[in-house]
Image (cartoon, rainbow, N blue to C red; front, side, top):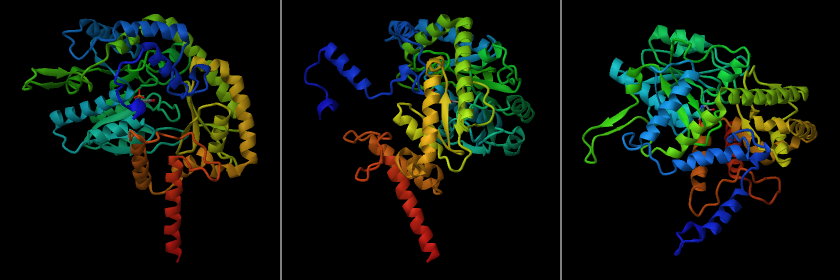
Length: 482
Ligand SMILES: Cc1ncc(COP(=O)(O)O)c(C=O)c1O
């Protein structure tokens, strides 16, 4: 079994640490700024400071606020600070969660239970734009709330009047994002707010990305539409400190305006043999280290620090967007923060080939679909890579134009096909099956990076799915013709 079995005898700490460092070599070299998502890194001294704060509360458990009072106090300070930033006040309610996904899950559970209690809703639905983060889809699936998806325009974003048509008497909540993940567009929260108020439906704003970004963009003098608690119809907001709050992983917040809503988030069970139990969020054990690092980040940055970081990230994002446009690519819509997507509007240029060629040059590029595009979340770390990135992108675009046949190879083939294969249910089944296989202990693990360029090599799993599906599709079509 090798490393997957417990060693008979404990190993030396130094040897274990060496082994862990060795494993890190499998990862992207994010400190160089070659990654455009997942990591919010501000250099070693700051990381060391956060780790020290984290370490102090390494063993502390927020499960019981009566025991670890320090954590309850930290949580109160974090929520108070975040609420103020979002233009709420100290009459509001909130908790620190383990991440954006937990915050999204909680909002759906809360409003479902609230609607059931107050309005007797038994067949709940939620109205959300198709650009809402996938965590909302997960929440709808977990909590059995039907999704009423509102189609957005890839350039104009969400039209609030389309949301209006989807709201009915079983709607338990409306969702807007500030900004949405795929293209970085801010949904029209003011319009959604008045609709929500008129219909008496809660409105949650997903500011998991924007919560610690948009307030500072506004303070820097950029024009932004209103999207936070200044909009009266907004009943709750989620904002992640582990994204643009530059904290350690494992820290998001969800904040409610009203106690009556928050009460539906609280789980309480009075008959358990283990004692009367109440919990404000999804987790049981809640990791103290993440709270401490989140608090440390807020105090260490302060308003001046966040303004500076935001200014730097906005500067880098502008340079990147300008440079990308100069290469003839299009920035989708009008993203007002540091998050954006870019695509090719020229049928002879496959943007997924560009992504493959950029990866060959050492960049880690996220692909999105509907429409096919590449994605970037820019942080101050990217200041130093702007010139190099644009140089490589220019070359990659030129090479992609010269070699359109590359769309049948590598990840371009995988993503291109996955995005367009018509039977979505089958794509889902196959992705699920193969994803599960990668979690088999004796399995090979996820191999999205492997290239399928060589004829004799087995293509990576997504590509195999896509190829298989495409072949099935072709066979079916042939049958129809015959
Ligand atoms: C808008 C939005 N909501 C929710 C999430 C989920 O956050 P997490 O990855 O911390 O669970 C993300 C993640 O990028 C996001 O962009």
